[in-house]
Image 1: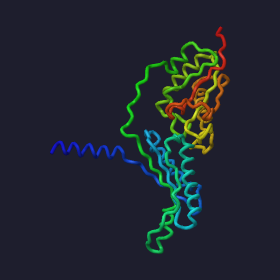
Image 2: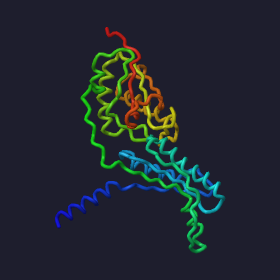
Image 3: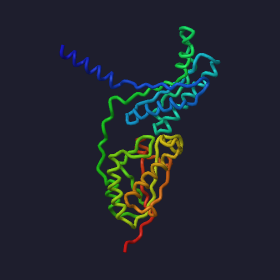
Image 4: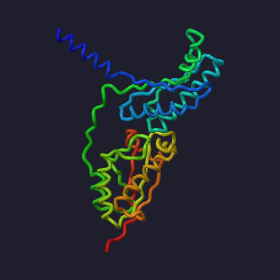
Length: 278
């Protein structure tokens, strides 16, 4: 009996761990542009899954029962593509979006005539299904290497590029977590002391189409890599690093590292000039 209970418990845990997360986005009649309230709901959903290890994302578009089959197939695909673009603009890996399909119309199952408007409104939608990785991937143990603080304290030469590791931005935003600010404080102290070093702050994003920049959720502008670089610039300036020693630039997605997508959400310092100290 005890073995049976353990077995059933394991089955329950397995089922729960593999549970898919679902979200629906609703559209106006004949429209594939996302309504503002639905866009806000979608961003909230993205914030809930942004730190999840995702196996795949399925996006299915639908229409109501009115209109020709061909028209509804095109419209439902446009709705699915609109949702995919939001995922991409917010730094979700496009390779995880394995299904982005327009399914056409959903037939009515009737119902009373006064329910028609409500039912059709619920059928004009995109369904999103997010499947998490199971079992979770074990954390990779990497050999220890010098971090940004150690590198900035050491011997530098013009052209050196230092990754500001351990700086975590919120997905889709240009500001750091509180834990990351502690790390940046230490970096600022080092750079404030090394007054002979001039540098450019380079911001990068991940997961967008081609080399496009990602959209800053706060400003709704497609300049997230610039916004992240400027955030670091402003922060260092407030901590005593002279502005004339620094520049900032957004690199968009020009230089992906080719590994995990999260590693492309990064900021680097490029040493541009080192003056001899007297």
